[in-house]
View 1 (tube, rainbow, N blue to C red):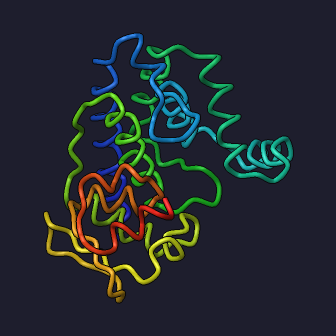
View 2: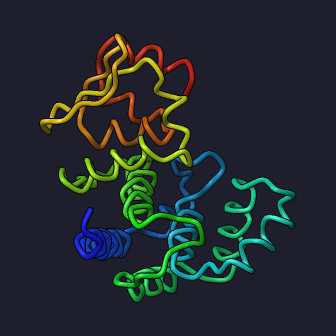
View 3: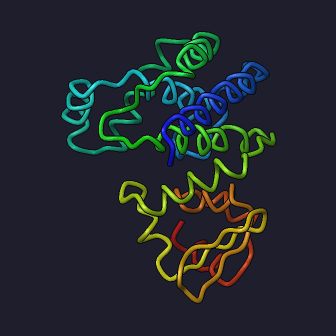
Amino acid sequence: MDRERVLSWTKAERLGLADFLDDLEGADWETPSLCTGWTVHDVVAHLTLSTRTTLPGMVKGMVWARGDWERMEFDAARRRAADFGPAELIAQFRETAASTRRAPLSAPLDPLVDVLVHGQDIARPLGRVRPTPQEQTIAALEHVLASPFYGARKRLRGVRLVATDANWSRGEGQDEVRGPAGDLLLLATGRAAGLTGVSGPGAERLGRVL
């Protein structure tokens, strides 16, 4: 995948999400997101960290979290959410939309995955629609399926994914799951909310593990 193309996609999605966040009201920020235990405020705080996290800071965070990656991410987001209000976080997010920096150990496509998925983590609980662009979503989905970080290989073992809004499918399993690429991306990243837009024998199976 061409690096400049990915950076362009990521910048556009970040700016689009910043515009989306501008329209949120006060109570929206305290709404629980699709990430268990995280509010919308926490998720936005987390998004501002992807261009600001350093390796020493990550190591320190892992020590504080006793080696628990998810706890480290949650603690960092909560601290930042406590330090900055919604308007400040939106400004920070918009300011670094074109940044080439990314979190230590992450791949070039991870920031794109981050903004696409977390955009849905925010929008769906609020009952709002945030469309996911087809080409970018397929690229993100391919990356998630190939990366060991997201756990998709284990989660989707024996399942064949088929996009209904793109000429795309992956997997050799007999349990097929059909749906929009955006919902398949949510399933691949462990979000049960993706089940609302899919069908097929594999959907019931995934419902038991998500």
